[in-house]
Image (cartoon, rainbow, N blue to C red; front, side, top):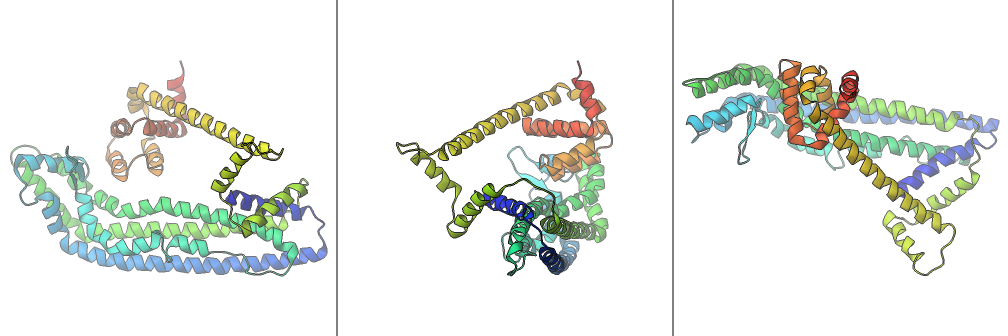
Length: 436
């Protein structure tokens, strides 16, 4: 409720002031305010850009230490934890190690025990950034999200009252932008952290493929030798590559934050100060929302408190004409929500049914497999390891066979997401299969 009133107040404030007479002095005042806000924006952008640059340097230092430690211990750690752990040998472990290679460095036993070569090799790198990563991405005063919360181009005080409604609109736009950026940070955080293990897996893929092709007498020893030899020969570049990929993702995040703040806030300033198109008369609505906004500023009102008020009007007390629409609106919203949920469930089942029905044709005819995999990864429908397994498959048909393994294990939701991605990337194929 508070966010709704704040947002409505900001927008109606702008419309209200635009509808009033514009004098020459107001034009002068707007130009003055525009310059102040533009300068404030550049100062704040420089501040946050420097903050992100400092974070990048700290990660560079931590990762450099992790690279050195990884190069020293990687062979020993891989042997002790995965390649040839003490007390495990013979035919039983031969099957485990082969499963690790077939799974591009990862396998899970029937009793749930995980064996992960990629995690073992990247553990020193992950340990080196653990504290820095937590400080940067979790709730703390030194996190990126906290820095964005403190970011503002709004002036602490401004004497000209005619500009207050325009500043109220700008405050609303700034709040929405910062919320969007913080959500984006949450989405990118997982990708940034998992980039270390994913990079190690990519570097190790040739050895996994070679070892998985080994069969016959003495195959366990030969598989172990292939893996150990590859780690030894690749350690001088493998960990540096992983470090570089994480730093690149951090740099892209920095660029995204600065670019979004600059472009979106410049546009918001322009709209708040120079949008003079004729707009409808909203004086009555403006006064109502303004009153609600002022009450909220003096006494917090929550949705829970609002819900408590409704039963009072239906328990024998007189109900006013203003209260009836409130209850009706809420009932309408609940009905609409239920309809949307039913439609969503129906769409999910329909998409899953399409994927099951046309499995054979889709495996043979889909060519944009990685584009679809990108969509599924972006929606957290498949994990990084599954994405990599799909990526290394040699042909589109083989990629789709791997894809269907993920679809069958994920159930209707992932099948529906696959169907949506298929509609986007292979619309002609979907139409062809759907036609009678």
